[in-house]
Image (cartoon, rainbow, N blue to C red; front, side):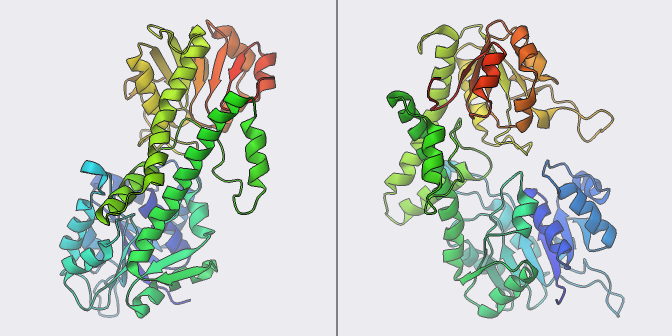
Length: 454
């Protein structure tokens, strides 16, 4: 396979995963970031992101000479690759923009980082370069990028990512599909060829369809999660069991098993901003997307539902007071397998509990310091929640433990000892992670979501 010179601008979890994985496919990759200290750490093989397999892949590709790191987009796109026969550095052939697009005012995606890099590199791009929007961006961004570039000799392609935090490397190297959107077939095919070794189905389309595809996928998943949370509440009211219900419907191939687990609500770096961004797209097109709006409303309501569940578990009444009630929170990241706290439902629920007067203490395995590792220091507090380094400390004197993140390690805790440390032996399991029988044997009352009382 012909090796391409690829520049990746941005070393967040999308950019770093993209760079390392493309290097593993045989391409020459230079990753750029504006954070000098971060670039130095990456050069040493220190990866700040908790992402299974990523640190090892970065180290492997740096050692192989296929992956390097520089400060600034300009350094990556212009003469940033090993020298040619004339002794000069070579330019990038394909430039990936993997930049943050956070939710701005009114839910609109904030594209300032993307536009700043386009402005910075516009005059530096070699003729024939392909610029690829990898970030999740609103419909029309490829056209806007082309306008900002104002270069008829540079093509703009939309190539959305479909990576899940906690399995990003696996997802990149084992994709369900590759989506490439561009009005120029030759440019689209050049980008698609980067992934040829993966053998995945490839969708070649126009840029607008590719941009909308990412939003459509994420918003559909959000709807699925809100739906199963609503079904879990209905199960509680009619005496059914959500585990049995989701098992039964999940065997239907039209539905599938994925995203059918009830929880404290969806969050993270993607679903909240993407659902609001798609609402903005719909509003701009004069379309009232009632289904998506209900999905968001259901998710917001789920947080208060969890708080009410905790109130009832502790006081016996859904309107009982939580003032000065000590609660231990197990898990603060938005999902297991990552240290990402962005839009974490755990933190949203913690804020509501704190507003209700509860005294909180939290434990999360991704936030515990690693002895002797200066790049993984102790975190004392997150959003007003004091952190402890051992789950037993979270249980000490607690009137309830609240499982908010589905870390597998929580299943294997010494629940007998945990029960002995608590003031009141109650566990509110918002992920249905724990075995109810194990909790009962430990002398604990376990309260899940949508579970039939046994």
